Image (cartoon, rainbow, N blue to C red; front, top):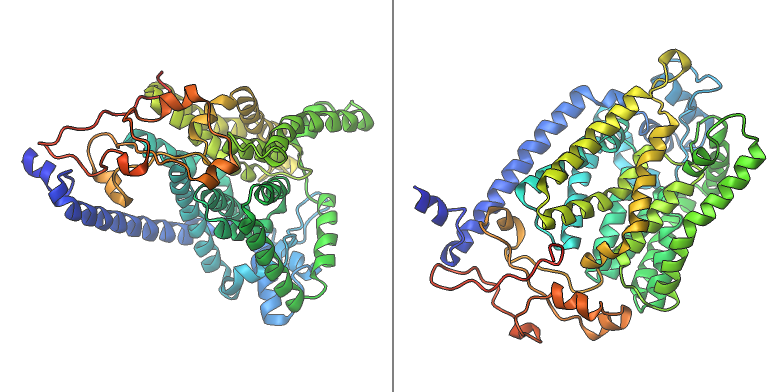
Length: 503
């Protein structure tokens, strides 16, 4: 029985590789289908009532496509308030106006013509699958196939963490921007610059999460001969805005007015402001000066790295620079929500990668549970009372802890990220597709020599680092690398590469 199990659909024999790959695809498709159906039914029947962040987009699209009314019209907010509060909003309550760029109405498209419960269920299911898909892309960026226990912990994090659950229940469109960002990073890592530019342009539906990183990436791409990224970004962005102006010529001025009016009715908690204004007794002018100084200090490390990457064309540790800029933008943004913090999930995955490589599974499990349970406990214990209009709101401390800790770790340990520099040659796994999940044994790591263009765009890692991260096979070209076919019982396995983290 054990012999059949080993040689069957989960086997690693080269002769049965086709059957193994086919079985892997079948099981993956069946599992994904069951999950999608079950989650869709659960969302439709139980969770759409809380999708308040989506309602203004749906209402704005509905009034525009059916009645020709501007999505920035006051009627959108009135209809949203009546649906959510069953009355008009009070002075200190969210007015639920549509405050996104007009092209979100275009992208939202036909969903606006469906009844809200169905539209919300479809959108929330899409966001759930987007979270899982973004995890897959991030693992591919790292060239990493986690152990089953690590993969389970990562899935648990992206599905049940406080930021994920809150964003899913609210149907927060910021999740779309997150998915576009991860897809763009994947495109940059694999030199699919046209695709990356399109994804970055689409991510502008949520400017609060991309107002720093997009200009930096465009300047970097222009200086490092990755100009197809710049071309595709502006082509897509011009197309989106042109369609918007054709459909609604006044949209930009209307959107601008909505954005500037947003702070009049919605509470905002800029993290830098919270840190510099812990007590109401502090004069506003003192708090403002301190906030400006703190924001400058936060941006100094970002400026140093991107000056080196753009001006000096040294893109070493590129992914670290991307995450540092993203975290800084969330710390100093004038308007931020905790649902935006999913933008920092790649940092958590990097931490999991390092812990697995060290074999620190106890620390990995405890750290994951501490993050998941701890942040839920922090929110629950600091939740403002309902009788003080605290329903659905969060305490300022909830905004602070996570991004501050992430920024501190990024600032303190940049050298750890050099092990997964996405612009250097990345490890490739022996099995492709879902067959990876159904193969026994360790994945064999292979390395390809960077081409001349890659070398020109980024400086190579230090020799001492290279000597411990590449396999000691003596190969100098791709053709001389050891075979990547699955070894049989008669063929000795090649020596595994040394683990740089353990060393």
